Image 1 (tube, rainbow, N blue to C red):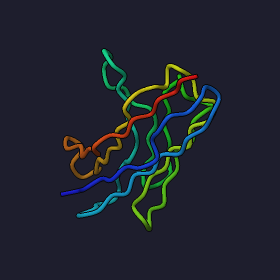
Image 2 (image 1 turned 30 degrees about the vertical axis):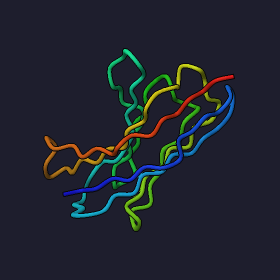
Image 3 (image 1 turned 90 degrees about the horizontal axis):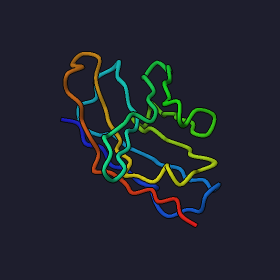
Image 4 (image 1 turned 45 degrees about the vertical axis):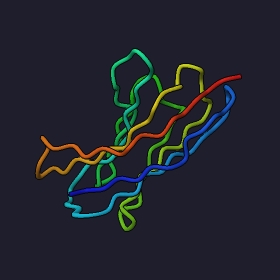
Length: 118
């Protein structure tokens, strides 16, 4: 079992920045992927960014150039630096973990609210 604990959400004005963190604990198999999805009210959950334990990254087109995902494998922690935030970035952000050994099983964090408002 993998437990994910997120932190760093909050309220920010348009154009501002936030940094999300997600620490994984438990039975961690590599290689794996960690990343972030988000879900806005009335919308489906969508992938924001992901990074493999080998360092490969993937971003949604809507956040490219504004968000940066990184990870510390020694700490089993993934970070999402969000810059130039827009109103439409408002959502609950969910951290996830998925091992290459069992790609059908996704572990989820509890979610952290990000609100962009003036």
